[in-house]
Image (cartoon, rainbow, N blue to C red; front, side, top):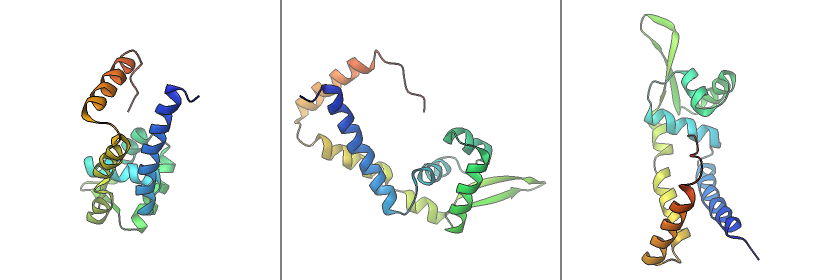
Length: 140
């Protein structure tokens, strides 16, 4: 018999797969998609900030950004008066490529929850809130 938590992991897998499929269709890696999304929300970030938020090394971020630059999805701009400091921006093409991810994930969630009516969805929400209230909060 499948346990309740195995079923919860299955739901998480379905969500993750939907996200990965959406990203892969745009010929991006998970890391590239994450960084593009971050830059759309935080234009002009510095590489150190990107490394920190993506929990990776500065060298890895530099390599990742080079790949995105080759596709004209991001650009690094020097700051006037400080030629050593470069700010990273998603280009219009980069922002357009990553646009719609939240909508795609909301649609995936709707597909996953489709078998439940509104009362069942409310009950599921209540039960999951009760369980997660006792757990440590994930860091973002």
